[in-house]
Length: 331
Image 1 (cartoon, rainbow, N blue to C red):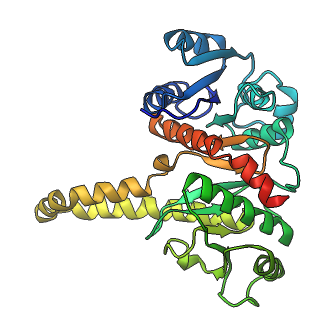
Image 2 (cartoon, rainbow, N blue to C red):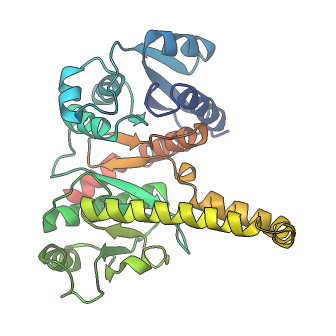
């Protein structure tokens, strides 16, 4: 177990398709891996109080009376349901009771609550959702992947600074290489947004290496990939879908005959390692960068492993001073 300094993370107990069980099991895993972690658990009293009693030294129940459902309008729900597990979790960070917040519930609601309740870091025009991608080399950070469909060039410059800070703090990258996702490598390629963003990044972003095409995203030649939220979300969903189809195709091929099954037994360990590298659960949740505190948003289908890894990422971000690093970069 870790012996690092204490960190308190607020956790939404009822967010996600498999909540509350997956969330609670994930907390148990995370507590076992880090003896400096404590949890403020938000959600209905009948869920959070018994669990807190079982882990009294390190989990505190924060009963809430409302839940934001997946189908609700995010901003409206956040404003109307002030005693929801998501809003209360963000309020705990704002008030200093916790240093970070995790939810696998509504992404829109978590993003809206973090922005409205926790507030933005001074100088941040728009928070961005980042994700960690497995590549042929070390993992890479891509942002924005869904928070901002329409962007200005200066937004992409801020995303670059925030992504580089995240790569440095959570992935231990000393001098992150930053690239702009585009349809060609030349500075003159792409939309007006891409061309103007390239000019800004080339002038003001340390470590900027130019444009990167979609086929190079997983090549491992850059550490931070910057794009607008619309393009980033499409790219991310395409990568997730392609990965899923390929793994199913490999499985079908390896079990299609007796000979193939015998071959599969030989390569099975390698295939399992490859599947683990491509499994989103291994990378925890997606950080919402630019808000005044650490906010990690989990996938709706988060398992206990995903929850545990998301809490590990949240703790690393807190201990690494992520919020302060972003503030310094944008000062």
